[in-house]
Image (cartoon, rainbow, N blue to C red; front, side, top):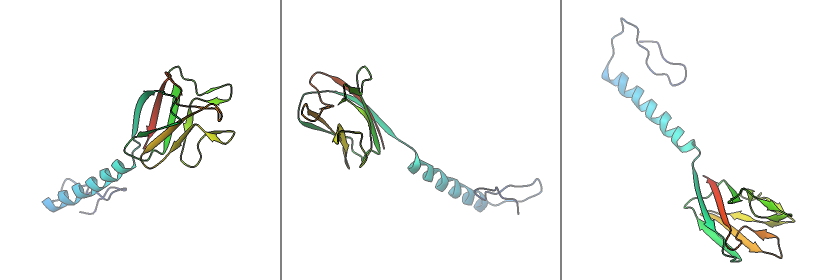
Length: 135
């Protein structure tokens, strides 16, 4: 047999071709490897919420290093009068207001802050915050 698919070189039989079990096994191995490669490249996310408690900082362990975190108050606010209540945060390039990050990301999750001096309100008491973390 000489016909193969363009991308993965899978067998393409013609009506008169004979085939062997090894032909199918080879094709299945190629398909399995290709699907496994897709599994490692897909974007996964975790959603959640928390109620702020006015602690200076508070870490949320996600079990993975997020590539980005989107955070807002329950009603979708991210910035009020230049005070940081949320936003889009990424490692080493977090949204910064006057050099004061509202959220920092690390190898296990993210940290939120409360500081009226630094205009950081991502952990304000009794405020419900929602987040989406991308792995």
